[in-house]
Amino acid sequence: MNIVIDEQALQHCGKILTACKWKLACAESMTAGFLSSVYAMEVHSGDYFLGSIVCYEDTVKERLLAVPAAKLKKYCAESAVATLRIMDGLRAQFPGAQVYISVTGLAYETTNPKQKRSIGTVYYAFGLGDSTVIYKRSYSGTAAEIIVETCNDIFRDLAQWLEKVTKKNKNSPLYEN
Image 1 (cartoon, rainbow, N blue to C red):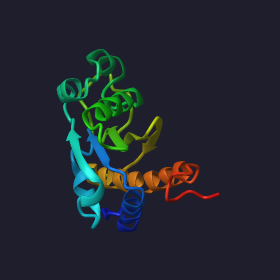
Image 2: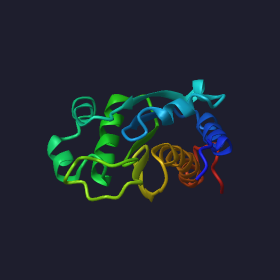
Image 3: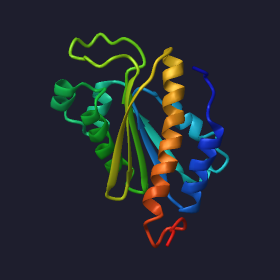
């Protein structure tokens, strides 16, 4: 695996967000702020990027994003359930955003005996209005490779999903009849 940011995909996301005049907010567990740092490298990020909550530790998920401790205990922080609950909390914290990203996963071994997922298992979710979609991906490599590839796939998948969703919306600048 190569540790290189897909700048073309990043710029494509930026163009969509800017064209639609949407604001973006992120909640990051596994990527620990790296996703947001990369978004900040995109030339138009000042027009759309509101900010991020880094919720690496479970108490941050619970306190800042109102993720129920019982859900984290039952499903683990690196799960589809946790990723979606993080998204719910993110929406509450950033009501001025239209587009939301939450990401969790395992970039290296965990000491949690309840965690049965393999290293490289990643979940990320996107939200726009009432629409939410979640992805599960499997990666291999070092923690750095897993995190960078996760971010690259987030850029690609987000651009593709936003295009799909907005091309159906008559009020969108991307609308196709």
